[in-house]
Image 1 (cartoon, rainbow over the protein chains, first blue to last red):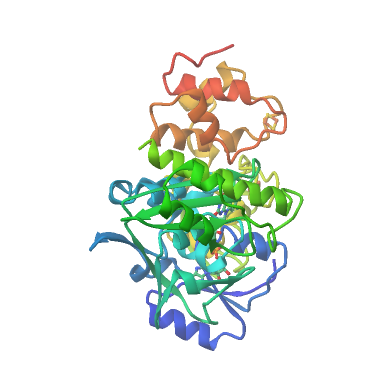
Image 2 (cartoon, rainbow over the protein chains, first blue to last red):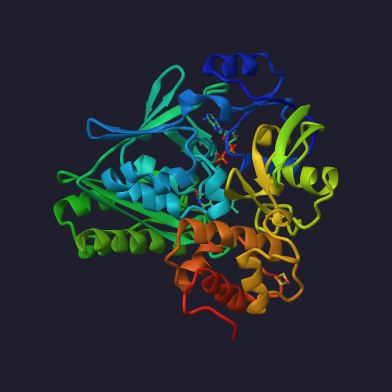
Length: 266
Length: 157
Ligand SMILES: Cc1cc2nc3c(=O)[nH]c(=O)nc-3n(C[C@H](O)[C@H](O)[C@H](O)COP(=O)(O)OP(=O)(O)OC[C@H]3O[C@@H](n4cnc5c(N)ncnc54)[C@H](O)[C@@H]3O)c2cc1C
Ligand code: FES
Ligand code: FES
């Protein structure tokens, strides 16, 4: 690991100021992606600005049909939260299957969504539930947030502060986990908002996206058969040692079908 | 940078470079070599310790992140004369071969039993996903954890 300066500010204003003064600053959240990256010398920041001391980034609140989760909320906290398990069980279950227990005890919502790994789980929920993402300056709709491989709408220095997840009538998430890392080879979140269907897909493409053909088919008939009737084109999908693009396209359908099955089974 | 942390009940104030990992503090600065480094890439869990009571991979944490925290390592849970019940269960169930993964397995298993007292073998296997055993002796590890959790599915084979 290269040498760097380490800071742990107590407020957002301080964090933003430290970023501004740094030659090449990076925010540090749970460190479960960033620290391995630093150890591999794939990043060489002059300054690490640890967000763990900022209380404004923490906390879970359910109000007005929305679950508000602070960016510095650990995966394990989301998985265990009685409020989230009651109001939005699909999010608690998703968080409870990220990586392993040790990773969940450190990794955070904000770190995962800011990083936007193509195989990360949370992006499927951000897209599938139509979340709103907040930074120190603005709010961003889920549909505008994920842009490309590890590329989001965040600009340099922008801090994700909170994500608001609307509560659907019913929803389920299914992933086909990589057996070693538990990252999603493909993960699909299906949500029903009073007949309006959203389908968020992760793992398949360079970043999470909505499967609109599946949404339309499910709005017409909410059934596994409706999913099976849709062609999922493989164009632009990821192809690597874990799975070919063609296999991923098939997995999108299979995971969507299983999610619909889970929802119908109640 | 200067940090203060409590390890196994003793407070230490240390002057370390910013890029020091928690596992380096534990092994190299404090000489507690029971915590192992297996992969150094956050996959294997051999370096698992408790940070304020929860299992974490100490190879994936920086010194600054543990300033003010309380850490427990394998040396802090029992003594050779009075083993922790999880250590005793591992011994009784022959849950180790070379022993390299054992400190991390035991630290995670203690955390697992505390958070989920009602365990079956499937839950133990899922709960230990972050810990790899190169000797692949998982069967007896699962039995040991179940034994320690009081399940009748556990016990010596
Ligand atoms: C063994 C292992 C298995 C894993 N398995 C899975 C899995 O199955 N599914 C999954 O989804 N993930 C998985 N992960 C990744 C894990 O969820 C990470 O916790 C997550 O990707 C990053 O979150 P973090 O809080 O650790 O962020 P960090 O590593 O601290 O930061 C990640 C990046 O985001 C930036 N950043 C962090 N917070 C903010 C913020 N608030 N605003 C702006 N930028 C920010 C940082 O600068 C950095 O570039 C796994 C990781 C490991 C080590
Ligand atoms: S040495 Fe830390 S996870 Fe392998
Ligand atoms: S006992 Fe040898 S690595 Fe597990």
